[in-house]
Image (tube, rainbow, N blue to C red; front, side):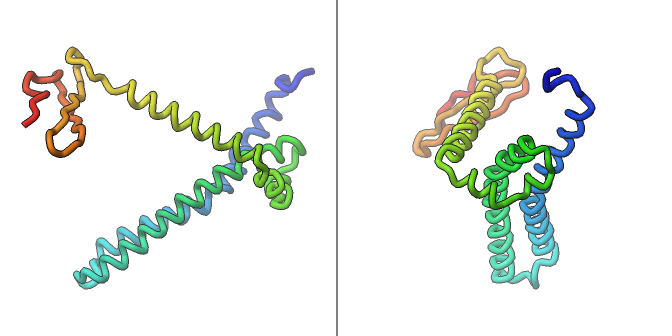
Length: 171
């Protein structure tokens, strides 16, 4: 009997893995929600229409978003080790054994493996993003690249009915 014969237990283990991943992402999601509520509250309330109030509110919202990003990266770094602990022991509590997780995530091999996976994911996302934009003139929906002199920027102009003849104009 190999490991793929008991689909019922595999499904239960999969649900447990989803729950473990959700626990490791709860804090960043909660902070992002707090930042969103706080930012919207600042915008709606206006803080007496004062520039200082808007600056303080915007800065605090930005700090919460940055904190959310940092905690998301930390959660993404720890989650594979937690899932591995669960898979090895078949105990849900093993995924929250922080002493054991710490010994795993502080190794050079784990860091290199995690960074390699992230680089492959990011590289794949960039390749797929670039290849999914049609740049040819015969497409129904095209994005025409236009290099504007003096700005040094490549502007992308979307057209629903193909690229018009004046699309590549530089002035």
